Amino acid sequence: MNAPLIKRSFDVEAVRAQFPILERTVHGRPLVYLDNAASAQKPEAVIEAMAGAMRGAYANVHRGLHALANETTDAFEGARSTVARFINAPSPQTIVFTKSGTHAINIVAAGLDIQPGDEIVLSVMEHHSNIVPWHFLRERKGAVLKWVDIDDDGVIDPGALDDLMGPRTKLVTLSHMSNVLGVKTRADELIRLAHGKGVPVLLDGCQRVVHGHVDVQALDVDFYAFTGHKIYGPTGIGILYGKPERLAALPPFEGGGEMIDIVERERVTYNEPPHRFEAGTPPILEAIGLKAAIDWFTGQDRGAIEAHEAAIRDRAMAALRGLNWVTLHGQAADKGAIVAFSVEGAHPHDIAQILDRQGVAVRAGHHCAQPLMQRLGVTATARASFACYNRIEEVDVFIEALHKARKLLS
Image (cartoon, rainbow, N blue to C red; front, side, top):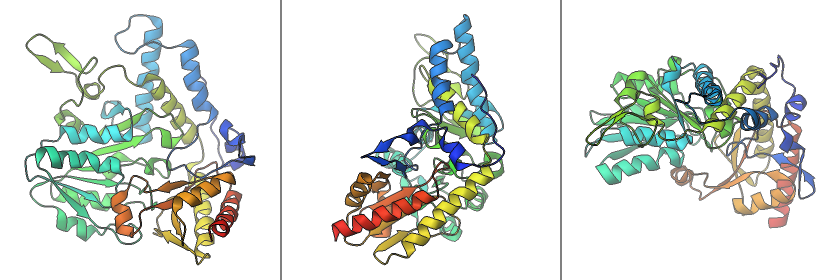
């Protein structure tokens, strides 16, 4: 597999040319894909890396004694090293391959030693993947969930978090960037507060890793979870980072091959992290695809991408603020390229369907964040989310389509 070419400046047309799907039309109109927070499209580098592995160098990994097994194992473990460098993890052994960001969070939840009355602190703007696993602990082990509120833009007051933590707090778990409001959590400050009380922290980084640099060592975070498909990689693979001592303290989540050391009739011993958490055949092709995605992404001018996405976000928010029949949800200063909104007198699902007929793909619903919807006083919103390959002019197409939807629904 060839290494991707490293670009030294950002050119949106050059980037778009690497994403085959962006050439297609929808309902006879050019595709304007604004559903990137749900899942990003894939560059040719990722498609070819996975296809190339299947064509020329595929076998199961680890313990094989033949050439294809060794080549595939090297590619698989090379992907682990790539992920470690990407988030500045101290070693590849702190990187666990999972099937999703959700799976990563569940590994931590299942491994915590929870007694009745122990507390998990989380915010009201979490994705369901960072809520439901803690409800499992509430239902099955008697854990107590304590909810930190946000202001109207999604900002967490550090003092409010500090007040919720006590001697029974086992974990603070927060989104590093909201999948609805786009707000970037002040994670470094919140982690310091938690650690000051001896409480470990898990961050859901599924949105954050694609909209800014992540350095898990600088953050001093205990666990970090993210997924491949939002960062231009394939579905079916996620990442759990954990400090070495934190991973070592977690029991296995699933049993099977690879995660064991010795299996006998009367006893079993387990492998060391990260393999302890990778039971069965792992996501081999997906790991190869994720490596290609990270190589492609880090080969771009990341600062230029952030500036480009910020310009698109600002253009969209300025246009929506100018419409007295639109309500914007989340206007924090430090915000990613995600815009959630409501249209007066129209259900978000209707808005999304009419936009689709005009070639514009947005998301509508509760976005797997029902406690946040309750906090905002709505049942659902529409959401436009942007990626590096979106043209700034696509905002104008989106706004024009929104005007047409409003007229049709009036």
